Image 1 (cartoon, rainbow, N blue to C red):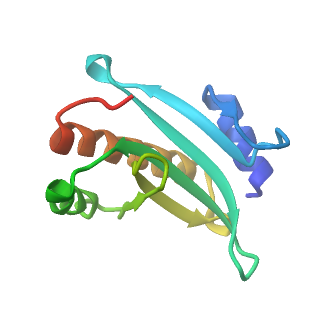
Image 2 (cartoon, rainbow, N blue to C red):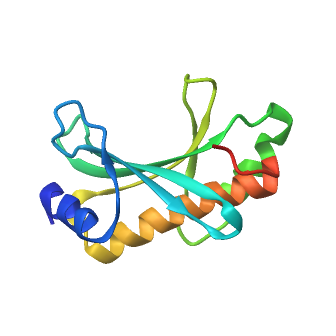
Length: 135
């Protein structure tokens, strides 16, 4: 698959907003409605490594996690078949779940499974660590 194939798959199957600077589809924002009135945002990004390998990256915000609760969040992030990472960004110290795979292994099933895994993991951390849906 190419990035255009990934973009086309997302465009056919999901509602999203193109946040890329030139509206070229390299940064997408999706909002997923979950049970119980909760929702989860997932950003999908086309990244290129220093060695020119293209990656599909998924980021889903969790919110601010107090330092005393970080071990619990890290335990949850490592609990599963796929491993999601926690990334702290400087924007209000927001913690994000991050997952990525090289574009060369992309299939529609891989895109969907990484998207859902990242979204569900972030929602689980919000629920079990923070006890609330963070908007």
